[in-house]
Length: 467
Image (cartoon, one colour):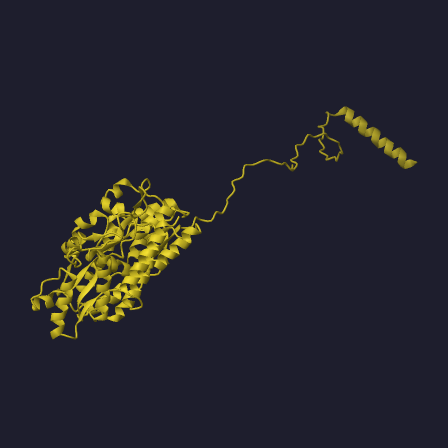
C-alpha cells in the first residue's frame, strides 16, 4: 500500500514539473508494422495458344533426270572398219549424232554381209511393225520393194532443203519411189570395173582389154611365160555380188533384164552367150574354182599380192592397192570400164547405199536430225577417206583434202559413165534370190547354162504376174 502511495506522489510531482517548464520536443518513433491487406491488381498473363494456320508450302520433288536418247542403226560390220585414213564410220557417225543431240547414243544392230540375209532381217522388223530399228543402211535395189510396202519414212518435207540441194538429182532418183524420197545418199557407192596389171601388159605390149575375148587373149600370152600367175579373179559366191557381176556380163554381151513388155529377157541368145562364157572361164581355169565361194574381199587378195593379172571389182579396192604396207602392186595397176563384146555395152553395176528411216521408229524427229548429220560434208568426207568414193554430197568433190587424197578420181569418173542400175522391180529380193541360185548352179556345173536361164525367166515371169 505504501509503495502504491509513493508511486502516485511521484507521478503527481512529474506532472507539476511538466506544467512549469518549456514544452518538450516530440520524439519520433519509427516502427515497422506488418499489415495484411488485400489489393486488387490487374495483371496481363501470356497464355500459350494452339492455333491451326494454313501456310503455303514449297515442296521439293526429286525427279529423275531425263536419260540421253538412243537410236539404233541397222548396218554391217564394215561400219567398225576403215580401209583408209578416215575414222571407222560408226565412230564418226556417233560423234555427229551427239553434236545434234548431246548424250545421244547410236547402237549398231549388226547385219549379215550377205545382202539377202540382211534384207530378210529388215523385212522381219518391218512386217512386225517393230520399232527396234530407227535408221538403216539402204541398198538401191531395195528401194522399190521397201517403198512399195510403205516401210520407209518419206524424207522430202523433213530434210533441210539446203542439204538436199547438195545431192545430184540422179542420186536422189535412185532412192525415190513413187515420187517420195526414202533414202539420202549414197554414203558409199560401188561401181564395177576391171583392174589390170599395167606393168605386165606394158611388158608384153598388150593394150588394156576392150572385149572379154581380149582378157582371155592377154592371159594366154602372159601365162605362157609366167604360168604361176593367175588370169582373172572375181567374186562368184552365191550372193548378191554374183548377181551384180552377172548383170555386167549380161549387158556386156548385148543382153538386158526385161523385154519392152516387162517379161524376162534373161534367156535370150545374148544372155545365154554371156552365161556360157562365165562357165567357160571356170572350166578352163582362167578363174579358179575357189572363186565360187569368194566374197569381194576374198577375190582381191591375189591381185593385191601380185599373183594374178585381172580383177573384176569396185573402186574401193584402190585404197588397198596403193598401200605399201599391204600391196605388192603399188603404182603397177590400172582400172578401166568392164569389157564388152561387139554389140554389148561397157557396164559397171552400181551398188549405192544410203541412209533411211524406218516408218515404225519411235523417234522420227531425232532420226531425221541424225540422218541430216550423216549426210553432211564432214560425214561424207570421212566415208570418202575410210571407204573411198563414191558419195552423194557434191561438196565432197570440191574439198581440197579429198582431191589430194584421191588422185584416181579421173579413173572413177570414166568408169562411172558406164553405170548400170539394178533391175527395176519391186520384187528385187526374190528375183535376186532366183538369179544367184541359178547362175551359181550353172557355174558349179550342177546345171547347164540354158536350163539355168530358162528356170530364171520362168520364175521371174511368175513373180511379175502374181497378184
